[in-house]
Image (tube, rainbow, N blue to C red):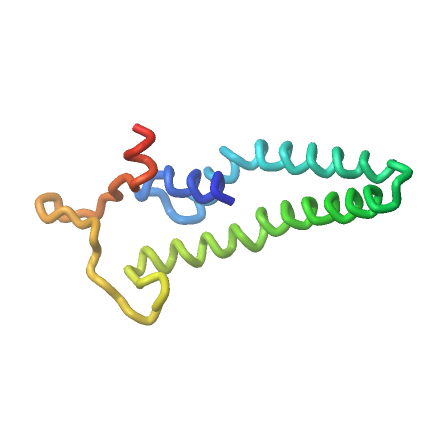
Length: 124
């Protein structure tokens, strides 16, 4: 989820929201898919162990990772879209009924520009 959110935040603000989400999924989708697939296969292989506790754990873990992947690429992407719409409408995250003036507005240029967050500045 963090990788997906970070990929969406790295997209250009000039692009429409659908294009930003699409570009982010194209960028990180294959790695998320391969990582989830390898985890599902590893846990599924563990279901062939003769110990009942390990077998049951492996089956449930494989199912949990598969369902987590499906939710990440469907429901979580929908939540990212809703949150992006909320942010573009300048609404507070905990109280979406309250609008606030933009914190990232540059008075000289008159356009909105996204400033890098704390983590991005630290990594630079």
